[in-house]
Length: 402
Ligand code: NDP
Image 1 (cartoon, rainbow, N blue to C red):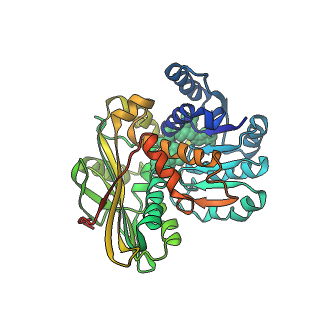
Image 2 (tube, rainbow, N blue to C red):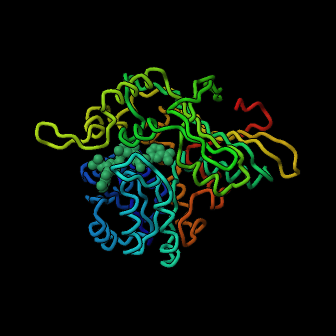
Image 3 (cartoon, rainbow, N blue to C red):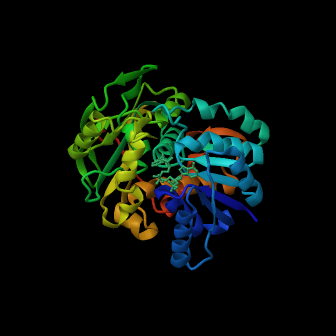
């Protein structure tokens, strides 16, 4: 009997737990572990009520502690761990996987706590160790990174002989009714969107001021939305794995209100990640801010509107003729909430994590070593996206606006 371990009981963990439970014949016994066991229990109860099947097992774990993880892995003996805790825990969980011989999947690349910087180099350094141990590690299997990387691999496999221009476009046209809230972990989200912009052009990285490049882009079913070039982690692996790309950029929509709040947060020092002394106690301002902001996991009930995320690609088709291609998914926050109790951003991350795990459990993506998802066969994954709640659509040879 196979066994699956999920670590992290936030918004994304909630969705992964629901989708894994829906597909329990693939995943076998399921254990949900996180820092706060009460959150795991609440998710397990909701799943028990909703699907009438047996609840998940739950356990507390501090995923910063390798020995604690190893003890949990050895007692439960999972085949795969789905890491949907925070990027800070990636390396400790990978270390524990090597020690207890467990395969690994995550949705976000490693970030050190004391430096707002994400890079694959730390996780790519595990390549030889995972290979030698005969274990698979699948990196970045959410929506972006994740589905956007698989969309790109699918385009390369079926339509392009050479991809030249890749623009990943991420629009959240949802309204949660709050003056300011982030759609996933506030600390990680604010670190990501306040950093300098960066994109790939003619063999090198070009750095911009934060949000310097912007224009309105039109999203299917939504319309035009101001979109900003930011640095996003999948660019690093995509330009390496698809070296014909002359330019690769990532665009995200932000409302004016959101940007104003962000600017104020930065200007008053609340985005700082270094500890300060407050009443004799050391606190990290951005962690304090997280504690007072709305919990992204609680936004679902009143969240209306939808997300639209996709890839706009230009280059040469299999016959060497110029083509343009746009592949995207739209996801309604209310549909996500009705199915899992979580909002659309958690849903679009958690569903692909479950599908990636399914690809592993079925032996389709089982390959010793450390891989970004675009290095694995996109076809069976794309098929599952349609079945598991994230249908995608294609547009050929229309103006891509970029
Ligand atoms: P949340 O903050 O809602 O959830 C994180 C969970 O991890 C919480 O349950 C938290 O526990 C738990 N956790 C944190 N630290 C530890 C630890 N040391 N040991 C054990 N558990 C811990 O985040 P999200 O669910 O929004 O995001 C989860 C992951 O998904 C993040 O890595 C995020 O970057 C990634 N993500 C990826 C996206 C993609 O498209 N690829 C998009 C969105 C998110 P507690 O409840 O006690 O705080």
